[in-house]
Image 1 (spheres, rainbow, N blue to C red):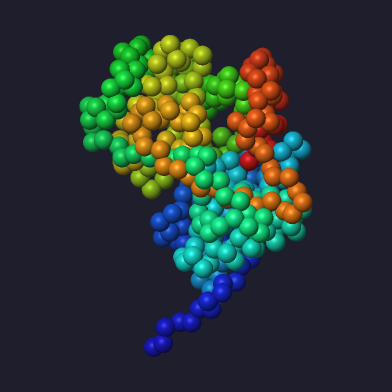
Image 2 (image 1 turned 45 degrees about the vertical axis):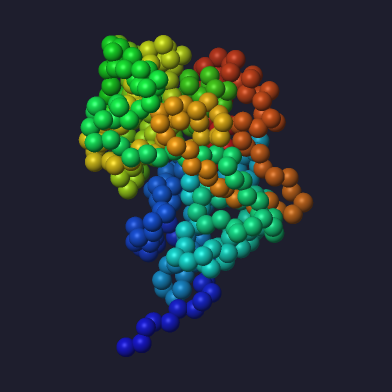
Length: 355
């Protein structure tokens, strides 16, 4: 019997999020992340109102490439097709490199039809070079992933000496740790996270986004919180994907530093992840040279530079929603001084448009 024939140039178009080919394609693709998952697309759409779209490359009936997108609109930051929204990864997944360019071309055509002047690809197959509106951002951010140790003592010894001493201080404190996704867990996490990002000068994401991620991911997401008495002082919402735990939205109150609660939190998450059968700890991305970047290096993680791609329509200014850019520094300084209650009321409206 002759092998089936597939055209060398794939057909590219939008497909439904419920297309039954998506699950097997992601399962088999080595670079698929939690941010390619239809559950992430649906959670962001539900939690923020930003429309989820999926471009697919097909050869016959077979799926050979995928580009998940969110159409993010903000009166402050403009419109962008992001792959994917509120994620640190995503981007084009293909069986072969020749299938990536048709997906990028289709994305620019879709952006034009939707009056969207920008596209952001966060990971996945990148353009070989800049041009035709595409630019590449190399080394601006780094990812941090390392294997989990076999046990508690081995995990502690894997942490460099100086940071290990901070972890031991946190372990000696009279703190308690809980995990789950109940209403109490969610309320504690939102209170801590909202205070943490206000102190950093950035608006908090909508509560509905966290709820939608927890609801959609089920057992593949949870919240770990560190308590001082009945007060939550550090909390993190984590995702679990392919044997890795990713502490994704986490932070601590002003009291957390003195209590070493953040150190206790991440060490407790390592234990929790091992008990769940995880093999790797994915500390996510940080801007190169930032405080978070150095914090993760202090834990013994090796930074791996990440490459992102952006497209800007001809004659349009490049989108700037980077909270660390010089353009936003005055606003960040002012935001840090806002009363927490006011920041929590207006912050989600602003943060919803960051994408």
